[in-house]
Length: 275
Ligand code: MLT
Image (tube, rainbow, N blue to C red; front, side, top):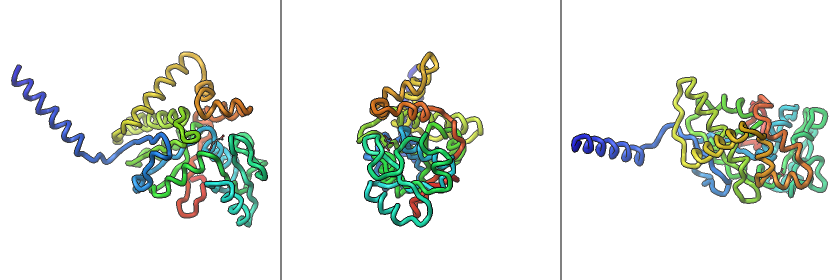
């Protein structure tokens, strides 16, 4: 018995020292708010920036419907300047408090950006959370745009990326469930696809595990009755949208794998295009 205890203790000590000193080559992380990102810590990492309700869902949909590029802006003033500098056809889009900004052509509803509206145009987009969150990601190796609507397509692009960090945009400085759920859903898909392909899954950080648990619990309760849109309606990002009559956007944003495209932010040109 004593021998077994000694062995178990030695074994556990080895595991613990390895865990505390090792620097795993593959890491999956979820950061729940942009303010929790230390920008320099993103160097060498592939970042997925997400604002399910609604900025990143809108970006994916606009590009899928033929937008030439999306130029994310940190402020309304910056958006006006970017628009003035455009030589080709361009639309100003975005929101404050969820509503279209005075003087802009469009708001931040994915459903507004039909092929007729956005086809072959540049979309200059200024939103309260999503396009601001992108500013924190400038030191990353790559920045990809995440949304429930392109979950599977993006998973395939990430399969061989060793260091993946999801940056949740949150709502007005608060953690919001729909972005964390996205982080968990992406973790689940990456674990499944990497395992099926015999590739290293990587170590999940504490926050990635929390996001994964949140997703798996939510998925189980949705499967037992209800919809993901119901969950989003109750989340911080959804409550205001329901109040101001944007329920169709919530339904749209909850449709997993609806849009099979992947978009990347060019960190030099600060332009988002399909890849
Ligand atoms: C944002 O980026 O701030 C959001 O998408 C907010 C919204 O659309 O209402």
